[in-house]
Amino acid sequence: MTVKSFNCGKRPNIVPNQAECVLAGDLDRIQQAAQAFSADKPYPISVEAADNGVLVSACGLASHGSMPEDGYSAGMSLVMFLSSLPLAGGTVKEIISFLAATVGMNT
Figure 1 (tube, one colour):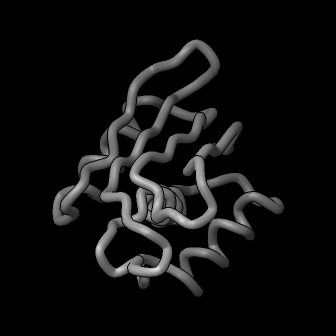
Figure 2 (cartoon, one colour):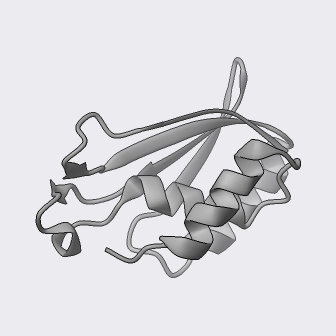
């Protein structure tokens, strides 16, 4: 699987409530992984076919950057999901692995 794009947040001082990425990969496999990942999460990951690959979306709860504990980062939820997938090696995989290991869902 390869990450083709990743978009998250519109303002630098807000915990983002929406994030999405496009993956090159098997739709059914990604959907199954999203269901398993989302089982114990307050905001599920959604997956659908798109013209340019597989669209993976995450929702969260926005909050001001001065009070991140009041929110739920859609961006980091998506990063955590991506880190659970067998992504192709390279810089993008390294960044996702780094963020998942060092930031995670901690606010």
